[in-house]
Amino acid sequence: MTPTEPSTARTVFTREGDLWHPSVLSRGPWDPRAQHGGAPSALFAHVAEGAMAEPGWQLSRLSVELVKPVPVAPLSTRVNAAPPTRATARLTIDLLAGEVLVARAHALMLRSQSLALPAGLPEPQTPRMLPLPADCSEPLRIPGLPLSGTSFYETAMTTRAAQGDVSRGGPAAAWFRLAVPLIDGVPTSPAMRAAAAADFGNGLSWVLPAERILFSNADLSLHLYRPPAGEWVGLMAETLVDAGGAGIAQSRLYDEQGPIGIAVQTLVLRARNAA
Image (cartoon, rainbow, N blue to C red):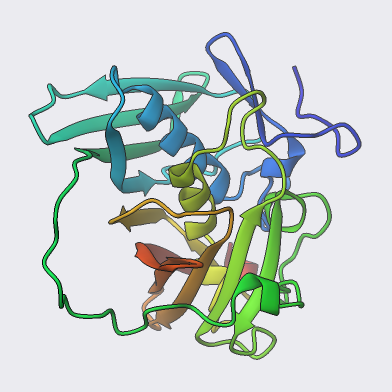
């Protein structure tokens, strides 16, 4: 089975037995053969949630190691779960292309509970990300990306620029919403939506010209203290880089009600003529 052609792709992944078949909607901006990091990250969130034997668990942390470029090709997952405690469960999930490990995720699941929190708790520094999606009209356009067309960024996601001037680089904010189901026949959960959006921080807040320097991320660490409500996930992102060849992108995540968590990416910087 080959990647679904643009004219027929309706989901990012289709499952066939033990294999996950990515469509061209999973493609990233650097190589048409490789996926955008948001696609496998969201897949990891789905596998982690599906691995829990009973309801009442929520994804609190997802640490994704992008070991190799994740190919737009059939993939399989392998789950190793530690015995859960009363409050937590820990999973390691391998993503394989054939027998080759291409990505690995560590997921921390927390058992949900209802607490009566005291009044007067401190307010977050930025209680809401404004303007809200309904008040934003411009789609996000990240300049200099070498590939365009059918992809995770341009086709699978609907975007709305919210803060900053992405055409000039630097800290910026934008809203993201999956425009298609992530997995054929499977409802997209709040955690899957958050993981799909969280990988956009480095592109959103770019500081280096993409036509000359690669700034792809080698990992993604997502921390959620509550699942997002609604379909839109907002990122308020900033990128820091060093001449030694490394950088980080830090993102605060929001839904329309307020903050939901944070995400950090480690960036690998390379001159394009040396890549």
